Amino acid sequence: AQSVTQLDSHVSVSEGTPVLLRCNYSSSYSPSLFWYVQHPNKGLQLLLKYTSAATLVKGINGFEAEFKKSETSFHLTKPSAHMSDAAEYFCVVRPQGTGANNLFFGTGTRLTVIP
Amino acid sequence: DAGVTQSPTHLIKTRGQQVTLRCSPISGHKSVSWYQQVLGQGPQFIFQYYEKEERGRGNFPDRFSARQFPNYSSELNVNALLLGDSALYLCASSLEGSSGYNEQFFGPGTRLTVL
Image 1 (cartoon, each protein chain N blue to C red):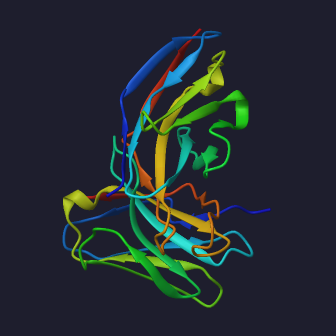
Image 2: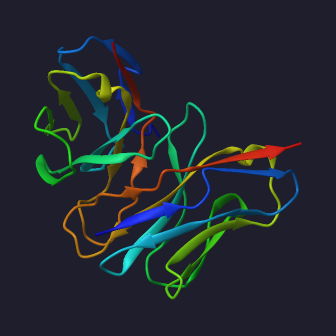
Image 3: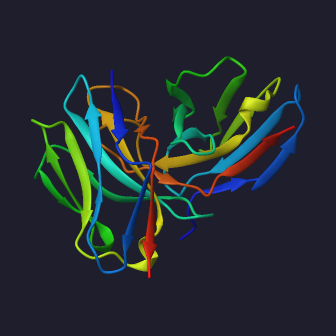
């Protein structure tokens, strides 16, 4: 079985302060993990992906995530929040070894950035 | 370049009716996946089609069906609509079906409301 758990449904930070969005995964196989962002009235956009290469993954817009197998975690971070980062963020797992290209999404974390 | 397009953008139906949603993938992409996103939740995988054949199916009832055409566009059909089918329906396209990871590019979605 494969799933992701996003530990916070809502995170609020001040502009210029660090962002931490937490995600734990469960997968029977070595998984591929992703973070997607969804801005209002826009399509889902891939922020970054982990596919068993380097455990520290850098994405777009200054975001990065670290794959920690011992903790089954894949937390998303950014050193300094910007107003444009306000959006819904989804942690996603794709189990390897399956035939289909289906993704399993977490329930999402809404990030609010306070001016 | 055009991204993934979906039509219509919004749709209102009543219980028991049938609905067809349409998706055009990015040019050159041969795989299309459908997801259902209920308000306040992450997207859930419904179907994946690759080269006009079903590659994967999520945990959805037989009221949901889909097909892919020779030009790789796709339709999602839902019969006997229920109130619980109200959701944002997302289409995603990717280059290939399952070899390695092929990034999925999402469309803006079709908002279905069932009254």
